[in-house]
Image (cartoon, rainbow, N blue to C red; front, side):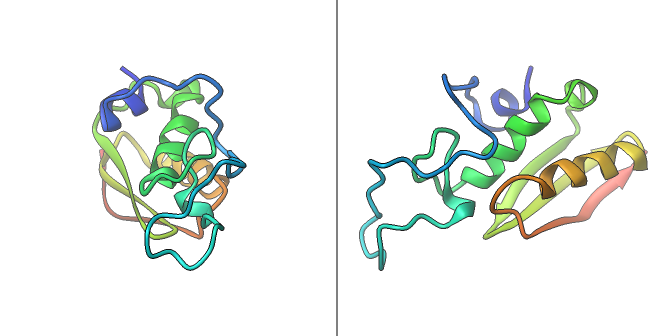
Length: 118
């Protein structure tokens, strides 16, 4: 089971992109100041998504062969910070995950304080 399926209960949508650009049809949610979607709220296909950054990080993890079998870690987001929680098999894998998460548009930091090694 992939990251998107395990964490968000969804398969990979057609044309999903790790670094998607906001779609031309984007509509700002009620009460928003502009029609600009912040990078951490861009979904897998460029739509507005409250958990867009976490979903795009999960997609990036799905695309890495070394990370497919890890089912003891979870991905969340707090604003533009990617939050990893759970247990990583080793420090090398965690470092790889941090590097991948940092490369996703909209990620300004990766919090690993809630990750155990081992």
